[in-house]
Length: 282
Image (tube, rainbow, N blue to C red; front, side, top):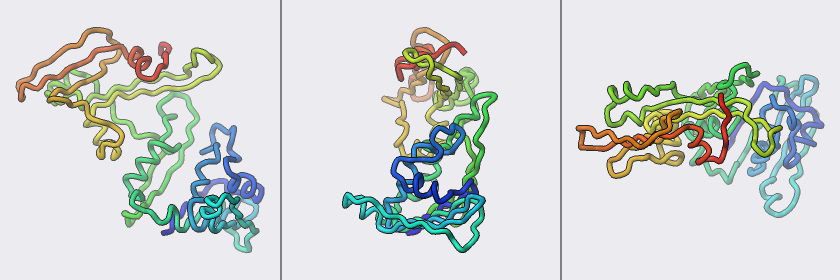
């Protein structure tokens, strides 16, 4: 099995290849908040393979570097031994990585929907920067073609969020007993501070989404690995109507006498209970 990764980025110099790309737990991007990746962990998964071949150009010179048997060496407690040479060819600026025999050629998870979902949930492709005003965005695109696809799919940066839909009366009129499953409400809290370390800033965007909305948007939800439905004994529960502090209301519908519980609590209280975070006013 062969995996290829091609980009038109800044490329790598000989020093970057030796001291950052192949060096465990290191990255030249460390400290650059606008770079994609900085911990030096991502590229090291390539070592779980039989062979890695890299061709790169930093706008000045072209280099080739390869490493064979890295997985075997690391399992034996030895350091991998990559080779680096200046290439006689002139590559386009950027980097081309060819990975052979990754993970003992296990490929059951190398499917389009699984990889796409992973990219949007666990990598910078799924950034939430576009949810905050006046931010410098790291806009880039990925052409993804997994083993089960004949053609690549264009993926744009930015986590896919559903359109807000939180008018509960209209939702009940339209969807009846499953109104809660279509509920979507967004809250943005920019430049929050940790209570015990006020100099540490962070941003929060919270989407409260009904089960069907999540199911339609994410393949991870479809297979049940990310979200479990809140349907128990034919009772559907809408956990949040943010901004209101009150009791629990019950709405009984004609259809199968199913009960819908709407638990009305304050958004900030919910976040504090769930994650131990205190949100400041918007």
